[in-house]
Image 1 (cartoon, rainbow, N blue to C red):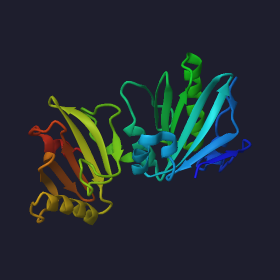
Image 2: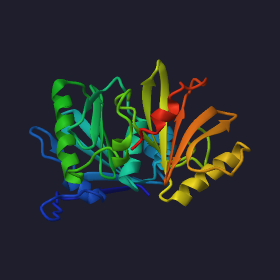
Image 3: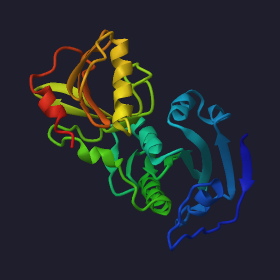
Image 4: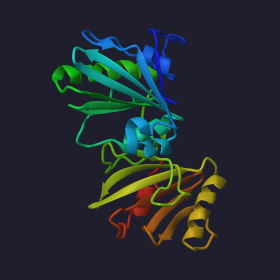
Length: 286
C-alpha cells in the first residue's frame, strides 16, 4: 500500500560509503541544495499500487522487476522538484528500465551514475538497483542545474561504480549506434523463451541491425534456449555449437552463433536478408 511518512535526515554509512536502498535511506541521501528545501514527507508505492502514480506506465516497470518507488520533493517558493526513485531487483533491471525510456533527443551525462539523460523538463539516471526520474513544475537554468546537482549527489550515494552491464564490453565497437544498448527481461521479438536479452543497434553495410546476446549461464542453459527456439521453428534439434540460423516465420531468418553459455544473434526490424559477413560480425562478440 501507499504510505505517507516523515523522516528526519539520517545517514547510513558502510565503510565510509553510503548505499541507498530502502525509502528512508534514499531520502537521507538526498543532497542539500542552496535555496531548496527537502520535504520530510515520503510517498512509497509498491507493485500493487504503482499504477496509482504512473497509470499506464506501470506494466513496463513491473516487467523490469520493479520492487518499490519512493517519491520525494524539493521546494523553493512556488517551485518544486519531484524525485522518484524506483528500486528494482537487480542493477540490470534498473538499467533496462532506464534504457527503455532513453531518448536521443535528450542530453546525456555519462558522469552521473551509470548514465543520465535530461532536458528542460527533467533528468533521469540509473545507479545500482535504482532508477531515478526527476521533474519540476518550472523550467529554468536554475532548475536544470538543480537536477544535475541532485542526480550527481544521489547517484554517488547509491553506487559509486555504477555503469552499463559488463557484458556490453564484449560487444563489437565498430558501427555501434551510441546510447542504444538495452536489457530486455522477457518476450524478445515476441518469444517468451528468448530472455533475458542484451541488445545494441548497429549501422553495418548500409543496414541497421540489432545485435542480441542471451547469457544461458551454462552451455546446457544456452542449448535449452536454442532447443525451444528450434522447436518453435520446427527445425532439427540435432545442432552443434557454431553458426546457426532460425527460420522464424514472424521475424525472418535470424542468424545465430552458439558459443558455450552464449546465444549471439542479429535481428532486423525492417526484415530482409543480412549482409554476407553477418556471421563474421556475430563472432566478434568477445
